[in-house]
Length: 424
Image (cartoon, rainbow, N blue to C red; front, top):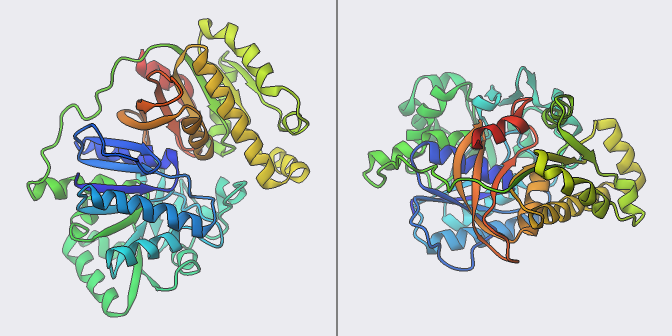
C-alpha cells in the first residue's frame, strides 16, 4: 500500500477513492477500521469513518485507530479527508483530528485544502466558494448538523487548532511547484503548522501535487488527490492500472434512499418525481410517535420494484427541516431518520434490490453499516466525486451490492436517473 487515507464520512471516502482510481491507483474503501489485512492487492486504502459530527474526542480516537492500522500495513503517506465544504462543528473536528494525526506522525506542517473545482468548490484568498457564492451564502449556511457561517477558512481552522494557521495564496500556486515549496518553507520558519491553499482549477491541483510528495500528512477534500498519483509514478512505486474501476456486472432491482436536505439533493428528488419516478417520503413525526412507518414504506415499495427504480426520501426544504427539529430536537430527528432509512435499505435489499443509491453522508454511513458491508471496490464515475462501488465483504448474509454513495451537495439534477443509466 502506498497511500493510506482516513475519511470523516462514507460519501467523502468514496469521493476520494474515486479520484485516486482515476489516477490509476487500485483503491479499496473500508467501512471502519479493518480487523484483518485486505485480501486484495491495492495501491491505496480509504478508511471510511463516521466521525464528522461526533465529539472531537471521539473523532480523534477513531482517526488515530485508523492511522495505526494503515501504518501497520505499510502505507508511505497519509491523507485526512473531509468535506469540500469544510463541514465541521464549532468545536472541531477538522482541527483536532489534524493536530492529533500530525503529532502521531511527527509531522511539523501540513496543508488544508477542501477545493474540488470539478464540483464547483474553489478557494481564493483563503475564502471557500461553492459555485459562484461564498460558503456562508450557499445552502451550507442552513445545514442541519454543520451550518457553515464563515467562508474564511484560515479563520475557521484557526478557531479549531492550537497551532498557527497560514495561507498559500493563488499567486504562489500559479508560479508552480517550486514556489509552493518555497512558501511552505517560509511558513514553517514563521511557526505556521497548517496552511489553507488557494485553488481555482485542476491545473492548480496538478501544480500542488508534486509539492506534497514528501509531506507525511495531507489534509484536504478529495480534489487534492487528483495530483498525488503522479508522485508515486514518478518515484517508480506505482504502475497505473488500466482497469482500476472494473466491477462485476450489476444485477437486482433498483432503489434510492435519500436523507440529505442539501440544495442539490432537493433538486434531484424533485427531478426524479417530475419525470414520473415512483417516490415516497418518510414522516419523521410518525416515526417519533412509534407508528410503523418503515413497514408502510416497504409495503408500498416492494410491488413497484419490478417496474423500475423507487425513491424513499426524507429530503426537505430548510424551513421544513427546522420545523421538524423544533418538535423533535436536532439530534433525535436526525437519528430517527437515519435509522429508518437504514432499516428501509436493509428491507429493500432483502426484497432483491442489488443496485442502490444512498444520498447524504450520514444516510450513506447508516445504510452501509445496516447492510453489514466491510469494504467497497471503486468503479466508474457517475458525476465528479461520485462513483459506483461494489461491496467486497458483507455480513448478515448480504449478497454483493452495487452502491452509489452520494454526498448531499454533489451531482447534477438528473443524478438519480443518470446513475442507473450508466449501469445499463
